[in-house]
Image (cartoon, rainbow, N blue to C red; front, side):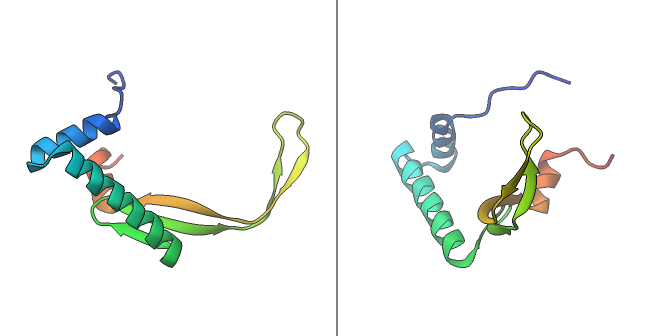
Length: 101
């Protein structure tokens, strides 16, 4: 297995998108900010935001449960809550992960 490379920074992502789409970095930054704002708004409004080819941002309900403090072993009651979850699409998984076992 090869060494893990560092992920792209936001600046590198914007530069690459700008170059490949004939846009300025400022236009790409504005687009990415708009996309994020839309994702947050729609996930909050309808509990789901689908980004075709990449995945789905969802708001999920987590039920109350009993957990354990790892330092002391003491049982702790964890209250119910809403959480944000991102699930990859099948297309994305197939493009990233090796086929089969």
